Image (cartoon, rainbow, N blue to C red):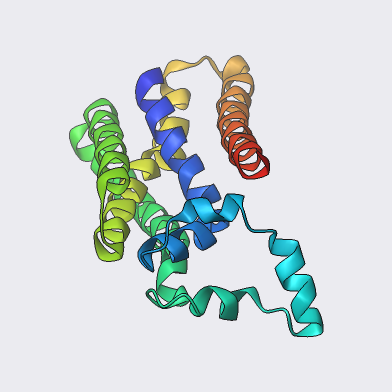
Length: 183
């Protein structure tokens, strides 16, 4: 259960921080190496534009797919995650929580691997939706499993440790990203 929860929590964390990577994906899908972000002083570029500073128009000028489609990398997985919760709870009653949790962990893992290997934006969007479907188990099934296996006087502690671990993973991923951008 813990390994599946870890995979789901990582997928959920990836959903939460993907919006901050929009400039990287805009460059990547425009055919520009995103490593140029290390050499550009973004604040100086925006300061040169003065009051007319518009990051969206700056990202759109690179010639890749439209920014609204790139921003769907952040919205579609969250939408898929939310919708999957409506189906996972009744399905867990029908076939059992454990097999469904293993299946969702596998979906989150495969979706993450596919997203990492994708070469096009459409393939990346499909992979992130698959990852969001797998990550839906974290919010839908884990609380039900805690209710089943933890004594009632320990449930609050178990649930708070689960959510604290998820927040810890998100913090580590955000810190790693910020450290990479500053280096």
